[in-house]
Amino acid sequence: MSDEEFLNTIEEYLLDFNDGHLWFGSKKKIPTYVGFSVRRYEDALYVINASKESSLMVGDVITLIDGVSIKELGEMHQKRLKDTIPERQNWNAILNKSTIVQVMREDQPFVLDLSNFDKEPIIAEYSFKQIGSNTAYIKLTDFAQEAPIRKIIKNNKETLENSENLIIDVRVNGGGNDSFYFPLLDYIFDQPVHFKDLFAEDQNVFTNHTERNYQLWIPELKEYLAQELDDYTRAMLEEEITFFEKNRGRGLIETSDDDDYLINGHSMPENVYVLSDVYCGSSGDTFVENVKKSPKVTVVGRSTRGIIDYINVVTVDYGEYEFVYSIAKMNQKYATNGIGISPDIYIPWTPEHLKEDKDLAYVLELIKGNSLKAH
Picture 1 (cartoon, rainbow, N blue to C red):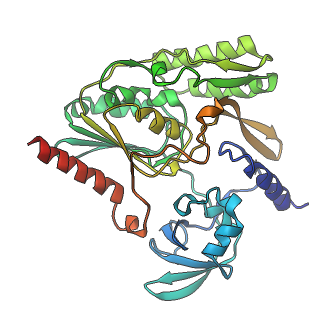
Picture 2: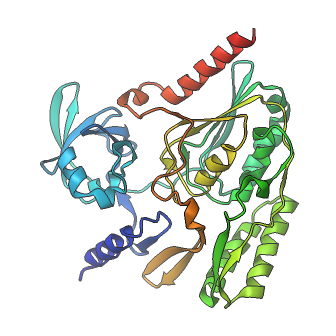
Picture 3: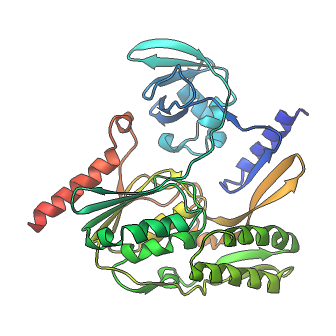
């Protein structure tokens, strides 16, 4: 078998588990892609980003890949696309293994030979801005660091406490560590509540305390500890290390969440709008799921990715290859894998989103309506 065939075989096998936290890759193979990304609408693919492929523009429409229609390919590659719902499908995996596409631009067709570009590193964004006099907007593309989130809150405390509305944009959010978004919860809930009280009694996590999982998970936790952390977060991570050391080799143990984090709650902002989409997963999933429990929150957009049935991810080093998997699982009664957390207000993705931020526009209209009612 060639390296390529071997990788494909393992990838195909892992896809059957329908678990976004399972991954196998070659360390010597530099990750490449076609230089652009797409999203499906009906039976065509729309270019949503063309950062490297200069022949394409945002809004270009791909109708054929290697001479085959998008509809036909969608039926052939259901497993690799990871979803049957067109707007949720991952077409990058198909394009990376293809050679030629037919493109339509303003009714003019042209053919493009696909190229290979090095994947760009993902640059995290933690930003804050004011929209009008009574609305604050926060964008978070992951929860991998605590310090930038705390900094946003610290630098904009007064604005947050005086804004009637808060919009939190997690439409693209690669996840990280749940506890890193805890400081935001004070503004999302309207009164004090213990974090563990947000869950049903049987909504527990089962962690597999094997010797190997111990060897792989402790370095991950220690890597988090190397960050600039709040005292509470640091104590929580140290407690987890101690618990694993005490139980190493004992196998699968149900761990009820004794983490008694107190969300203080604020009456302001009065309304919180969370923008979500399929590119929000892992800790992004849990964020959307948890904030939906606040009476202040309205989630707008599309369902999240849905990869939180199996959590706490570790990496096994196989020399030239590495394998990523989870050491803990949720009670399957609460499974959301592949389904995600649904929004309160669903806005289907259409090519119009490429010309205007439809989700944000919808929320701003809601805010305007509420403001008119209040006056």
